Length: 210
Image (cartoon, rainbow, N blue to C red):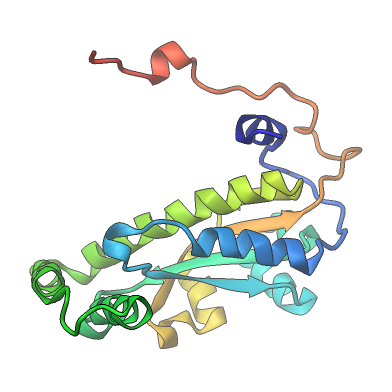
């Protein structure tokens, strides 16, 4: 099926049936997010994969009791860098150098200029930038789930600081951005399942300057 058909099929599932999603499909969704483009190739985010029922139960009150947290098969928590350090900026360019067989220091001018710009910014600005990159992978993961006919609920409704503390993200230099709950829809109990998909009209959405 085409991507458009996949996106027409998906919706933000409000009630999941608890059925497990095959790990191979979860892995494909994560791989799609890993392959997402990011600014300057920095890839400044990680995915925390959670399937343990006890941990999901601890997360649920942090997410205001939403049932998808515990009824989902897996939670993918997208967490972004809390700041750009020199090591974090250097690392992706070193990886490119090694894996592509490029000359040492091939991108030094660009990399150093990039880090110099980050040094003029606050840590909050760093996190905002990194979080925007995480959302690119987040969107691609949603599309990949739809292609695999896995229901995915995008979730921003949680207390970030409490989730960070629970998962020890501060020790990893990360801050949570959003959660993607993966599972299968409970068609009998989800009020949203059969409602028409509604989006802004194309004529309002596109501003054509040609």
